[in-house]
Image (cartoon, rainbow, N blue to C red):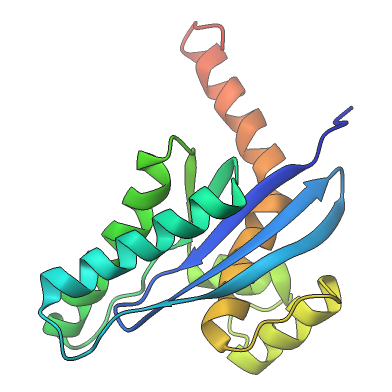
Amino acid sequence: MQDKAIRIIGIDPGLRNTGWGIIEVLGSRLAYVACGCVRSNEKAALAERLCELHEGLAAVIAGHAPVEAAVEETFVNRDPQSALKLGQARGIALLAPAIAGLPVAEYAANLIKKTVVGSGHAEKTQIAMMVKFLLPNSGAKSADAADALAVAITHAQLRAFRAKAHVAQGQRRGRAI
């Protein structure tokens, strides 16, 4: 039986706005902690923007002390330049918690939508409404922050399943975990 809350940060990567949301999980109970966006200066060089995202996420992680992280996977974009830039922002979203020593899980956008709303093709407004329902005290002021909370909620719901699958996989390989 779990007797200590687990603090999770969910991250919705973006080059302009990277959403973040922090929740605590105790058993099946979810509690809102904080959320927001790390913004980069659109007029700055790409390297500077990535640095701003990293510094912002690192500050959030240091300030709120999550113990696990979850990041939304990006979907394929028709514009190769945009896809590449988003991929670089996603790299920062994976790197910041990893540098802090947090285990990082990744979830597809459709899985997040299905877990939180019940439909893999839900609209952003539906996600925001369901996040508000599941976390009544949440103050997500942007779609990016609401999406990040949805990532954290998805991880909270699926982390036990992932842990069991990891143990089973190790046992099949003949290793004790």
